[in-house]
Length: 169
Image (cartoon, rainbow, N blue to C red; front, side, top):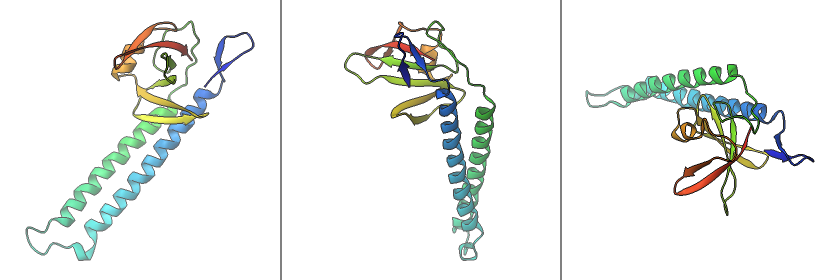
């Protein structure tokens, strides 16, 4: 994450966000593979000869078909998200910029481990980079809304604690 330079200013290695983007794309690829496997299994269950309904109350095959359809929709959604992230340009920020979509923000609080948040078009993921956990949050997330427009030195409330924005890249 942030690396101290000889001048004492903080800077993120130029390719940190590219590494984060690659890691996010890899996570999405794995999610897509998992959803494809689940859809395949549900489809096989729905069409297996042993699961042919024996009476009107035997709905295993029908339920599996609904599940396969739901998994197919999930695959489509994940593929759309992946395309969106792949096309999304990684933006550089510095300590003079206010936080906006694309920013990687570091928050610090006395006695706590610094926390890192990357504001992207989609959220809900955690990525491990250089031994540090980076929480990926969408620009629509309440925390992102709270952070956007603020800069280094400003404070935000997380839970009942005040955290200082100590970096923006």
